[in-house]
Amino acid sequence: MEKADVGRKILSANETYALKNKQLLARHGKRCFNMISSPGSGKTSLLVRTITDIGGSLRIGVIEGDLQTDLDAERIRATHAPAIQINTDGACHLSASQVNRALDQLPVESLDMVIIENVGNLVCPSAFELGEDGKIVVLSVAEGDDKPVKYPGIFAKSKVLLVNKIDLLKGALVDFDLDRVRTDARRLNHSIEIFPVSAKTGEGMQAWYDWLKNQVHPQ
Amino acid sequence: MEKADVGRKILSANETYALKNKQLLARHGKRCFNMISSPGSGKTSLLVRTITDIGGSLRIGVIEGDLQTDLDAERIRATHAPAIQINTDGACHLSASQVNRALDQLPVESLDMVIIENVGNLVCPSAFELGEDGKIVVLSVAEGDDKPVKYPGIFAKSKVLLVNKIDLLKGALVDFDLDRVRTDARRLNHSIEIFPVSAKTGEGMQAWYDWLKNQVHPQ
Image 1 (tube, rainbow over the protein chains, first blue to last red):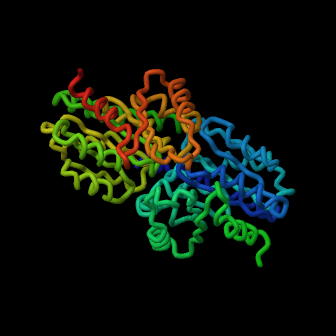
Image 2 (image 1 turned 120 degrees about the vertical axis):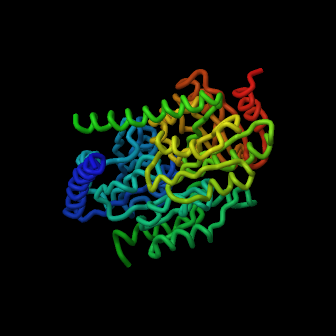
Image 3 (image 1 turned 90 degrees about the vertical axis):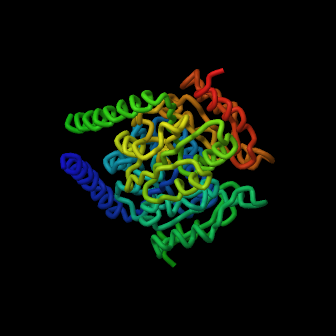
C-alpha cells in the first residue's frame, strides 16, 4: 500500500507541472512533442536532419534529456536551433518540472514548436506526461520488429511512429518485417501515423516533415 | 527527504533478496550473470547462439525478464535449455525477489550457470542487484559509439561488454568507432572485458564462449 500511495503522489506532482507546461504552450499557441525511444535509435540525428531540411519554414526549439552529458544539445545547436539540455543525473526519464524550467529558458514566443528528446528508454518515459500535444516513438530497424509487442505501452500512447534506419533494410542486412510492425503497432493504437525513414539518407523524411508542418499550419 | 527514504527502503528490500539469491547460488556452487542492454541490442539472439554453440559443455539456465510477453523464453526453450519467464507487468527492471522466485523454478543443481536477461533498458536495471556474480552489458553497433559516455552507470558496473552486430560494420553501413567505445568504456571501468561479436554470423563469439567457460572451469 505504501508503495502505491507514494507512486500516486509523485505522479500527481508531475501532472501538476505537465498541466502548467500545457497552459504555457497553449497561451503562446505553440505545439510540443515528446520524442521517446531506446538509446541509439537515432532521435538526435532525426532532429538535426529535420531542423536542417525544414529550415526557416518551421521554427523548432529542442529540449534535450540525458543522464549527464551535453552532447545532444551541442549537436542541435550546431543547426542554430535553440536547445536546452536537461541532465537528469541518472534518472531514467524527464519530469514535467524539469521541462517547465527548460521552457523558461527557451525563446518560446519566437518558435512554432518545441520538441522534447527524452532520455533513451523505451519504458519509463512513457509513464510521465510532460505537457506535450503528443508522443513520437522512434524505433530503429536494428532493434527488431518485435518491439511493439514487447514494449506496448509507448506504442499505444504515441501519435507517430518513426521507423528509422531503413537504409539498413537494403540487401537484407537486418531482419525486420515492416508489415509486422505496422500491424502490431496499429493493433495497439489504430490511429498511429507510421513513417519509415532514414535520417542518414533522407529516404521517407518528406512525409514526416509534411506531418510536422501540418501540426502548425493545418492544410 | 520522504522520496529518498522510500528509495532507500525499496533498495534494502531488493538487497535482502539479492543476498538470498547469492547465498542460494553459492550453496550450489553456481555462477550467475545479469545481462543488461537497450531493447533490440540482441540479448536473446546472443543467448540462443551461445547455448546452441556451447552445447553440453556448459549447462546454462536462463531467467527472462520482459514487460509482458513470453516470446524470449520460448526462443530460449527451443534450444532445450531451461528458461523461466518473468513478466514485470510494465516495470522497467527485474527485482531480486522476482529472480528469487524464478530460481526456485529452475533446476539449479543440474546447471553450471544461470544467465538473467533483464528487461531491455540501459538505465534502471543497473541500479538493482539481483545476486549475480557480474553484469554483462550488451551494446549493438547500430546504437552508436557514444553510449558509454551517455549511459556511464552500466558500463562502469559491468564485468563484460559485448559489442554486438559487428556484421553491420562491413561496408561502413553503420558509423561506429570501436576504438572510441573501448577507450570510453575502459575510462569508466579499466578491468571490463570487451568482446566484439556478431550473434548473426558467429564472428568473435569464441572468445566470449572461452570467457564464459573460464568462469566455471578456470584455466
